[in-house]
Length: 325
Length: 221
Image (cartoon, helix red, strand yellow):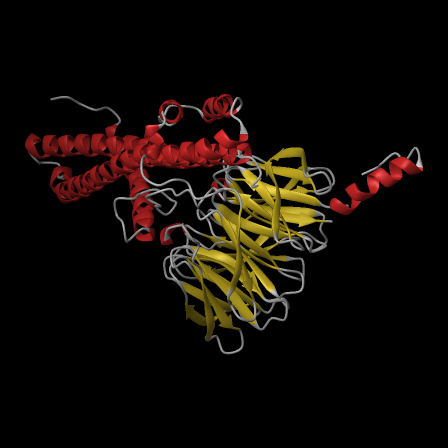
């Protein structure tokens, strides 16, 4: 953000502004499920800089390991669109199997793991060959996809079977099935690879699974004052940069919960936009971004003050969100 | 006898499509096993709450809002289902603009409670209609399945070259009934998808109203 400094006086005037709004040289990318588009925002100004058309019903999005491309699950087009983040064009279509909803990128940068909600499959796609490597049969309505930090294990949740499947990414065998809360959604690994956190939309809980023995190590429960139980639907999750706090999107409770990762206790509920669905951490760890599917906006949470500092309108039914430098 | 040229070629794809629609409906039902009358994708939240969208002072409970004529008039204007969000927001803006801080502090929470009560009322009626529609669809799906079974059973008999015209006519009639029942089901599925959007739209509008009211509140003393 260039600031013309014509005199010392203006520099001094600008200083508090700079302190209040640290420079965020980052880009925020949001998939709009009902607009078939990706909204691009400048992290410094929080203004929409462009909107890019993609295939039909974009939901899950993920950055390539080198940060140059955005993979977009376009469910109704039955494929993955590859958006070039320099030219802002869809440069490739990857096969994905039927109705891809969410995907995870292997640390090797080549393999994508895609949940096919209609077919009860996880499809493994080779990005370079642009080909399906294999299909792994899993439970009914596969949904969440969490790769361990070393890429050895994939945890896939199955909405109807209420299970988290641990899949060995080398042998492609399911090595464990863990019962979790009703309609499990996201699966997120701790950075140290020791535990996996699985949110359950209908159960209204998070199951914390020990990655070594696949036992439930604990359960997080939520109670939002004044909000009925059925409106508390945990979906998207993201850890703070230091791993001490898990931020959890609670759907139509319109809250993000801050959970102490050690005690599993909720420290605070933050009021955000309506039907908060997915979350992203800014690359410098200073902010959490949320997609709000009913109010058609994103909320910006300042991590240091634990406050919601802005909301910005995007497309219709914003769903997935990532931020990159 | 009425003939349906090309019926055979239309029945099969229609049945295949129906199969998919039925299995999708079954999937949605499985996901909402607790409430078979809620066919929409998102889990049913029967009532909206003020706490869901508002961090201002706890709004007055009950229908105190009805006792203030200006508030009641505003609520009645902005909450019918057909009112567009932008129009409602304009009316809220016009209502709040001339009020001083004390009046805002007193009246805007009342507007919120009235808006909440009336939106829940309108939204509840639509949720009921969706439930009735879902029950009707289940009945239609059963009818189609029943007719299809009859059609399957009649097939071999009607295919015989020496079969009397009766069997063939009966099969043609069954095909015709399957075709129209399928079409009715599919048209209703589209209607249902549209109906499922209405509670979401009302929820979004209520949230927008609440945020506008909260923004118009004076800073706490």
